[in-house]
Image (cartoon, rainbow, N blue to C red; front, top):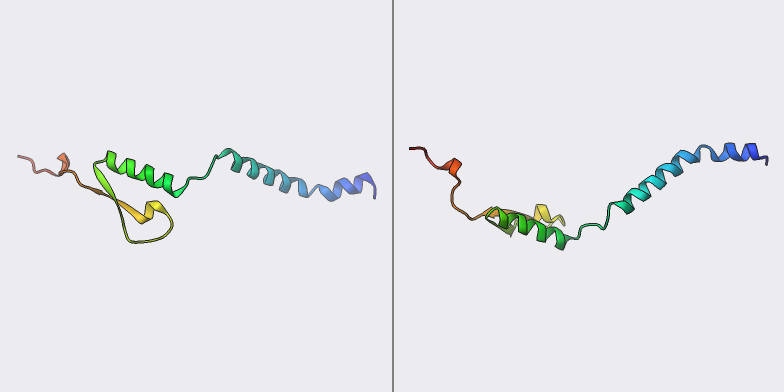
Length: 84
């Protein structure tokens, strides 16, 4: 097989290889995946900062943000108080 035919045979695969390499590099650059424990700790901290308590919803979806809600336990906000 001549070099010209060999180059023509691999030409259609170049864009595909370029895309696959780019996807592989972007996956490596994104860092480590978030663990459910880390996500739960972040949600708990955000909820407590807003004056709430993170409680389970009873659902088990495997997604921490859907399986828990932030129940605000503080007093009413200024926006909801009646004006005098």
